[in-house]
Image (cartoon, rainbow, N blue to C red; front, side, top):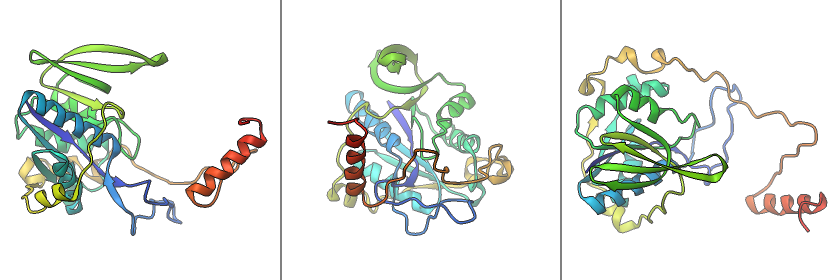
Amino acid sequence: MEILVCVKRVPDTAENEIEIKSDGTDIKRDDLVYSVNEWDNYAVEEAIQIRDKVGGSVTVITVGDEEGEEVLRRQMAMGADNGILLSDSAFEGSDGRGIATILKAAVEKGKYDLIMTGAQADDGAAQVGGMLAAMLDLPYASLVNKVEVDNGKLKVGREIEGGNQEMNEIELPCVLSIQTGINEPRYVGIRGIRKVASVEIPTLAAGDLGIDAATVGAGAARVKRVDYFTPEMGEGAEILEGSMEEKIDKLIELLKAKGGLK
């Protein structure tokens, strides 16, 4: 089975204190530590497990600048077979629809049985997987937390209201958006990172993909981010300051004081 997994390089919230620029146009990105989007990590692990069971290969793909190679190599060290970087100045500022358009062009240059994305990324929109499936005219399932291969088809599980589970059969090729908790992503060791450090990762620009630059990027975006801000503190609200450990201690004290803990 040929599997393509779409991944994204995002700020690592566990390693960064996210701050907003004074003009509200963006977060402060200087010196941020980046990593692969958490949901995408689960998608790659699931793809690797499927490949190990039925054969085939796993390709990871990302839209971004040259630093996007960082997350591709990490996922290749994890066990993916190939990586593809989609990079062009024309792609900058693309909204979800623009990203899906870029990915669609890349998908059509290959032959994939299964395309996977994380359920959402750092912006929380959770839209690229569904848009990509619609553009490709392929079956789609979102928030998938179980995948079983069955005679050329897939059985996929989704958690629904009330904590119940539903199972659906979906034909290949298809697109799945993977939920966290579907598996336990494997540890990536130094040996694996060194093994893929010199592997060539092809970079495809708009011209290579046959994309009209006017259809993607900031100029074509239908959704534009106009402001970042920290919500005002409401009545009775309190923002805890300090290190993570200090915040935890303060939270426990507050819960005890208000009768939430005994």
